[in-house]
Image 1 (cartoon, rainbow, N blue to C red):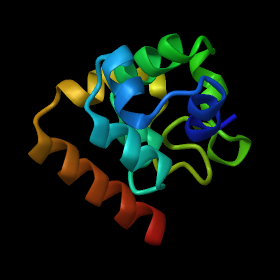
Image 2: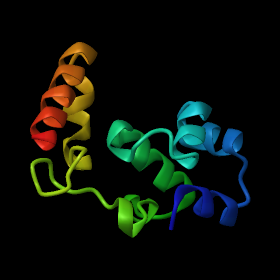
Image 3: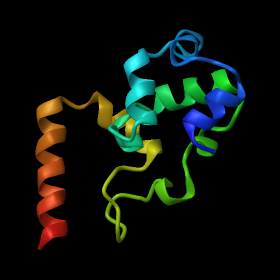
Length: 107
């Protein structure tokens, strides 16, 4: 079940869910509108959203968007278990790693 579906089942607006989950409303909007990959969302935020919606974190991932371990064929994002570690690194370092990974996949 996707985030938007779970939120609607819970009869919550994006703003109400953001307040209940203690996340920024734009995080919810970006996820629901496919403008921010789940791998770019802090794992803590995914857990907070899941708890606020009374679902398991993995239930918020559609089957096609299920996380794939980095380095696995077709992987373009880190495993959510590694997200906290990734979010702690400086943004410049994360962007450089993303560029390197994209270059490897392109070649």
